[in-house]
Length: 397
Image: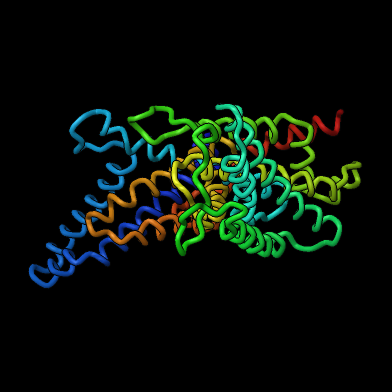
């Protein structure tokens, strides 16, 4: 019985239940906004309206499944699995951004400058990929590294200003978002810099050279490219950095209690600089995904709001590398399956409501525990005994 209490009191359980509630909230909005339900209510009463509502919700989420996991109506197996590859492709930058934002959270920093950091990395990756001629593979590697370093420098600037002036990172990252996006727009408006030839009235950067593009994993069949593999590598690096490295230990210690960390001899100010640089570097992986994973030119909206979506991914993932991986895949599935739901007439805002509801309940654990009557994490005797034994070991040592 105590073991079950421990299982139901974990963060993973609350995350799963938050996802369930999010889908239920989305189902309510699908029913309310459905014309079929309204017509059934007028014609046949509550029973017909209830049946129409069930059909609407079933069809909507079935369309989400077909658009993101497996298309059961496809003519061949390769086409049937295309939605899954699109989920992976769209999840790649979300996973990388979520890792970066989560790293900031664990150091006690609220990095909401993901879009600006992405764009600054994209700016220099675009320069490398369009204005330099390098050998194949090497060109792509240099462009990826430059995107990561460019984003890291933009993040390090935030950490430096916070450490030297005490300015709040939220204000700094918000303002630097505008600076980075405006700077990129200026670059792609200028013919002598990054503007695409014959771009017309819309400022647009040139497409990356073939030698700099992230290669497709299944050429001619799927659009999935090497960017997803880079995101998986980023997951492994994040896990090692935060769980096994000495700098990760300093990050966690500063995030837990900066005053105690300073007493222990850790330079909190220097840690802020390195933490913001590392946070932005992971976001830079997302920027490399966006800039080098395309075969066409792009505008200043290339960030696609991924820096902000990364916040929801980080919250749902709970700071855990594997949790962030699955959270990114979930939100990638939303992006991949959304158009299929719109074909049925489901408003695209419904998925936004689902995402918002998930984040709301993730950010309010007491509310989830109250709804499902979950035990508190501190109320489990087994965990209390473990904590007591650990304290005794520390005292004896």
